[in-house]
Length: 412
Image (cartoon, rainbow, N blue to C red; front, top):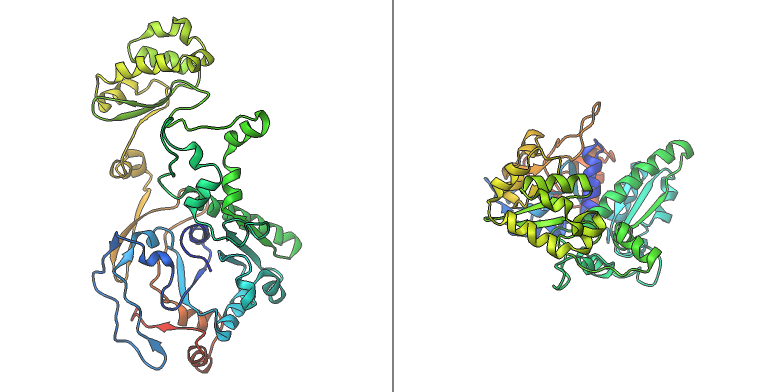
């Protein structure tokens, strides 16, 4: 019962590991991200719009499959249930009675209006692990507020520390707070399932964007809590290490980090400035941080005379952490990602072959895989009602007639 990013990212990870994930969507709109584009993956042949009857409705038309929706909804089934209808609420209660895990991202209190809160569903299934993902958590003065990633980035410190030294605060280029909350929730669900093996009881997981973002401030947060040190923006620089930033080349940029004296000495040799090792201004990391401006100026002067390719060849084998600043095309052409098969393809019934980034972790004795493409809206409603809940033809007709479920026949 999640949409957009944090919740779907969490449940995608569960699906990658083999869980049967049933995505509950609004009967006509579906997940908000189905409309988020361009870009859309165009249909090679359009879904049918003429398969309608007393039981089946005509599927809504989309401009294609949204790239945003596709990125986090593989390995799932989609069912279209109207939880505002009593019949829809009953279907969801029946599913909860059979489920191991329920994940939702409604504003706190919303599902309680329909008898679908944890306190309601744990009565029908005491073993249920019920995970709530919200902007601000289920308690506290802000708990009823909706929360989007960019708002929490601003409100929980991330935007304040992101951007150039003298520039305005900026958001991170991808919705990292959403993604990190999804990762936290995924880990919490796995922990709750391990706990259930001992206690035979599920529990409620209360995950929020704001606490996730505060927790991943890491050393920046600790600097304030321990030393009262307010943070500031540093661009690509590191406040406590130098050199550790992006440098311009003749035709691009390269990122270099020298975190200790040995790495700094290696850098000096590779840029043909061994004298810098003995320069009293740069003897220790503390010296280099103190004299950062002078040091960075020297390195920029050296690297600005060569191309990025020449700089990469010069630093290869140095033991120094370095890498080019790649665009997205260059990222997906990276030899290491290609060798690891990071991008995978799967066949979509209407959009044809689609590419997506595969699971990030590999296991020695277990398999994680993209088994099924992101589903069409309500593609599996009938299948789930019949084969998971055991509905008869009569029960199915009643669910549709009473407005609890909407069935679409895609002919697949």
